[in-house]
Image (tube, rainbow, N blue to C red):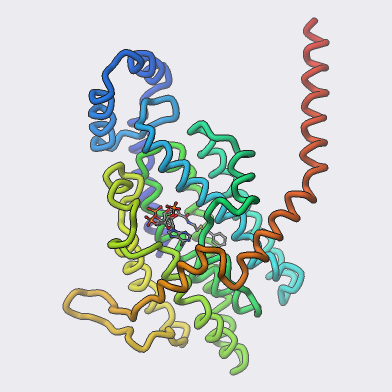
Length: 350
Ligand code: FAQ
């Protein structure tokens, strides 16, 4: 289902790629920009956005557009990196060798997504070191969802099914983001997320069709992850300070509430297929408008998690800091090796 969505997008992405301007044209524009009034530059920029042209790193762009992208892409990158932790918790205890191999691959993919996204952010003039320093200092946001614990194997299934499912729902429109490097990174990321979602659903299906204890374990994981997954899409549109501007700039294509509704509409039939119950007494099909109606989200919980008071915020940051320290020697070794290669190349050239 998700893959079909991606195929359509792929064709679209290819058309958009074809519309990309070449680099020398971008350089010429940047030279001309230095003596063009700001208002004209802004008008041209918006016309390009409206015309579905991709904005590329060397193109002129309003500073607020650049800052919005740095904010969103870096938060997204941090989410992928911190997002390795809840499932990483189960790598040593996966129930079979095959499950373990799949989980390792999945968690590595998330690390890779973080790397593409840090690279996309770097094209906007911020350094990866700076971004990582902000994360480790606790000054950067990452997705609220990764501050919840994974007490059972079924949580790994629920994350793949619901969290990756929500991530795909949010990220498919980002493949059409107006900023080229982010849009292109998202195409590959969405393909991998599609595999992640299916592996999670398959874990849930195995448990739901297993013993009564296994089915109960799957249900308990769904109970734990349902509401936090709905929160992943961000605050309601009426309380989302960035949405209107981001949609005008075609960074975001659909609003937080639109995406949340699409996710609910897709996921409820999947829960039915699993024979599991969504933990929402108010959930009901509204035939008139063709969507599920769902109960109120506890936004206080969301804001508490964002303030650093979720069940695992402290644990997650401590784990990231530890990993960063543990990796210091390899970063230093890689830099020393690169320096040695550089010196050799200089000596050979002399
Ligand atoms: N958690 O005005 P809006 C994944 C913040 S990747 C924490 O609506 P915006 C893959 C928001 O940043 C998951 N903070 O903001 C995976 C802003 O704060 P600021 C991550 C949140 O940007 C799977 C403030 O609230 N995905 O799961 C959250 O227009 C499994 C106001 O909000 C992305 O990052 C939240 N849930 O819309 C990995 C996708 N929601 O900066 C491992 C890209 C909102 O003013 C395992 N990002 N905030 O201090 C986006 O699409 C958007 O940034 C939204 C927020 C939709 C998240």
